[in-house]
Each structure stands twice: as structure tokens, then as C-alpha cells.
Image 1 (tube, helix red, strand yellow):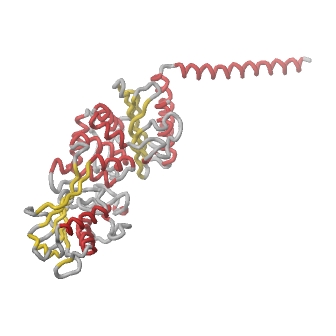
Image 2: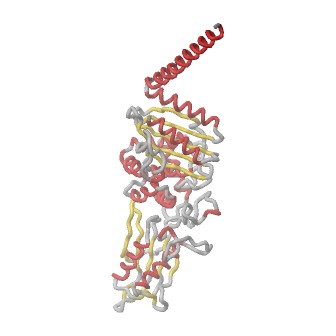
Image 3: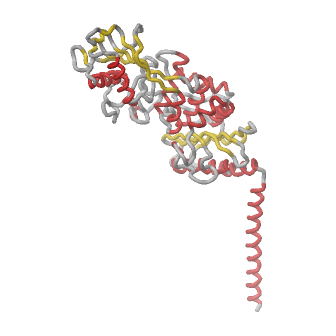
Length: 429
């Protein structure tokens, strides 16, 4: 009888303990949910920080409350880390502030000499590149038709490509030699058609060391002219080469694009060529012809100083984030995001070009549900060992937040992205 009573007593105590534990957890959860928004979110972020402490990678994170214009939360936010393609955030905001969304990229075509009565151009054709990353085969065909519409049937001189808008370096500073040229590390030339890929199908990049995109542009134009019945005086295809335009000719055709147009693909799709084009327009605005990556880097560094970011340890090596030499802090990225938010002429173009979580661009398959879905707008970044994310989110109290999450040294891109996505869900919840 005594043993039975002990069992009943023990069962009762366990039942009470379980009841108390369950209700304690419910009370705890209720207490957390009833806490002020900012305290609740910070507690959640503190838990994620402890998780990052245990992780094999290094993370640097900064969150700024844009509505209250106050620092909100940070973790290693002063650490200098590689940004991967979130470097495009620096390039984009600097460009929108310095040269503006409506700055035009103009590929200009001239002829020198005169056109004889028999349709012979007694001179040369020059195409002056302005680093248009969107210049297409259709644009080339339009240019060839413009030559025909001048009444030209033969060309006694040559077709020249002028790529002097930037220097002669065809690849970025700190780019991996075994990845060039490629989709992700394309030629960096001021005059190219279809990203510098090989005419007529433009399906691949030439691996020939003597290949030059500007010369190939002139070669491709010669073949399009031949298709329209326009030839050289002593050859089927007009001779071609590269040469600076000397001036004194007649401008007969211009293809025009804006920075705003280029920025859409640059940010939504993380297009490295588009980013480098914007970067070299920054460089050219500062230094003129044959400008280098250093001129673009100075523009970005000056912008960081302008927004009050510390540039100690920060290195700007290219405009796209491909370079192994880029280093930045989460603080610096958020300082620029804050400046963009406070500057309507920048924010409208920049915000609209950012990928939307679960919807488009490089975020189309991330954060496809929950409070972050369709809420987060951010630039992604991916390199070997590097996963980064920087942008904006609206919190549940209606506050706008800017954030940067830089992860370096990760062995699992999937895990790093999952961590960032959970972080964003907490900001949005």
C-alpha cells in the first residue's frame, strides 16, 4: 500500500512539475512577445550573435534604424572583411551621388574624309567606346545600317575602334587569372559588342592572348557592312584596327544608355560587367581618358569619407566585388545605405534596382515566406568562402532598417545564407 501511494505521489509531482514547466515556458514566451519591439528584436539578434560565436566562420553585422536615425545593433561591425558582390552597393551609391542616374553612356561613331559620288568613303570610320556593357548585336546592325544610309558603298580607309575612355587593362585588379575571361570575369574594355564575345554567334570568349575586344568590334562591324554590300576598295571586308579618334570627323551615329538602365542588371542580377562599367565612369569623371581602377577607387573612398565612415583598413580594388583585394566593414556599408535612404534622388533608383526577397534577382529563391518575403530588398554577395548581404527591411513596427551581414571563411554557402535569412526574418518579425 505504501509503495502504491509513493507511485501516486510521484506521478502527481511529475504532473505538477510538467504543468508548471509548460506554463512557465508559455509565460516566458508571452513575456518576450509583450516586450517592446526594439528589446525583443535585440534579444533575438543577441542569440544569433552567440550562434555566430560558435560558428567556424567570421561574421560582421550592423543594423541601423533609419526611421529613428539611430544605431540599432552590431556584431563585429568594425571588422574588416571581404564584401564579394555587396561591393556593388558602394559603387552604385557613389555613382548615383557623383555622376547621377541620368548620366549617359554614349558609343559615338564618326567618319573622316568625304564621300565621293560613286559612294566611296575616302577616309576612315571611328567608333569611340564609352564602356557600354549593354552594347548588343542589334546595336551593331543598327550602326551598319547607319553607314549604309550615308550612301557609302565602299570604304577606302579602315574601321577603327577607340577604347581610350579607360586604360588598357582588360581585367580587374586582383582578379583570379584562371577565371578570365568568363561570364563572371569578363573583358574590361571601353568598346565591346555582346560583352566582348566572339562574332558572329557571341557564344564564347576568345582565349587567344592577342584578342582585343575593341579590334574585334571593328572586325565585327566590317562583317556586318559586308552583309549589306559595303566592302573595302581592295578587300571584301573593310580592314580594321584600334586607334584613338583624332577629331575632325562627322558624328553620324550615337548609341545612348543611362547609368540607371545599367544599374538595373548590375544590382538585380549582380552583373559584374555592368558594375565595372559604372565604376570606370566614376574613374573617367575624375581623371578623363585612360583612367584606371585607382581613379574609381578614390571616388568610392571619398564617398565613404563624406558619409562619415571610417576607412581605416578598407580597400577598394574594383567596382564589382570580384577582386580578392576588396575589404570593407559592415559599418561602412550601412553608412552608405543610410546616406542613400536620406537622399531621395539616390534612393529611388537604388532601391528599385535591389533584388526583392522571394521575388526576383539574386534573392528570388531566398526568404520565400515569412515576414521577410517581399519585404527585404538587398544586394547579395558570393565568392569562395564569402557570403554577404546588405540592404533594407521594414520591421513589424513600421520602422525602416538598413543592415549589412558579411560572412567570411564559410565552408558552407548554404548554411551562411540560411543564417542571413533567419537574421532578416528576425528583423522583419
